[in-house]
Image (spheres, rainbow, N blue to C red):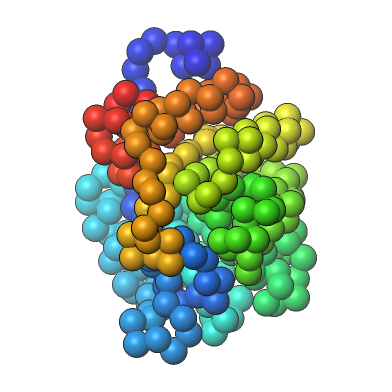
Length: 259
């Protein structure tokens, strides 16, 4: 860490998470956010609503938006491209959006290769890709809790394709899904191997499952010590990833400071 970031100072940016739709057909067991198609609480934000959220964020000093959403089968591909163009036309802000799971969904839904999807998003204004949907990159685990979403190999493949096209990305790990410690290490090693080939990951973020209001409600929650140990191990394994992001929103400010 001292070689990459000398001193005892850490940095942060102000950004805002914008979920453009909560309609989703992935049916992940750990998700409290999504609603099935035609559910009364399902929504798709208008461009103007998204623009207002960006304005609010910029007034608080935001320089980036994290933009993700559900796998909504009713939104055409041009909508996403038009959204990116709209944002870039009206706002000077970094767009960190569309996880590998979303890219894979677009690829399948619109019969495009992942490279074609990413090229189109890049041309429309996307600046970088978040690591959403990574969970645990071990297929047995994903088959239990997120079997309709991009598999472990595909998730990593999309990331490698993005890196090959010059797109930087973050990478994540959500633990506490019933995986073993060996599964967590396998996840980290796979990330390290991709990074050794591409150098495209800018930051690693990890956090524990939040089971409330999900199909996994009742799953024992992990504690702050487990989180700090996970961060420490990630630092050792992922010495080729230049930044580690503290999950203070999930873990609380004090634990975030310690991490």
